[in-house]
Picture 1 (cartoon, rainbow, N blue to C red):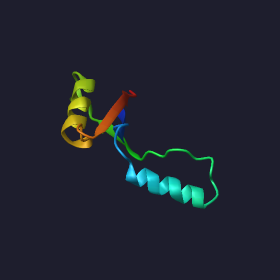
Picture 2 (picture 1 turned 90 degrees about the vertical axis):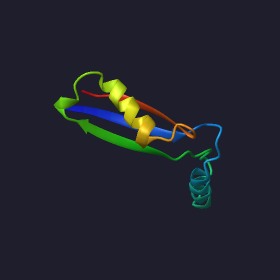
Picture 3 (picture 1 turned 45 degrees about the vertical axis):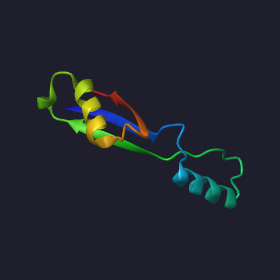
Length: 81
């Protein structure tokens, strides 16, 4: 079994409206030290042994085709084992 951790975030040039709402809420709760907030996605994938070969290439393909929108999002991943 191979485990992969994937993080997907909006590209830095894009406004993160959801992050702004969270930032404003934190400020209203008294956490004024919080600066910019960016919201993203965290995924853990468990790949079966039959996924042998180039795991990184397969995960990159999964990200490009489904897990991330490459037009507006960046992603990175880490193959754990």
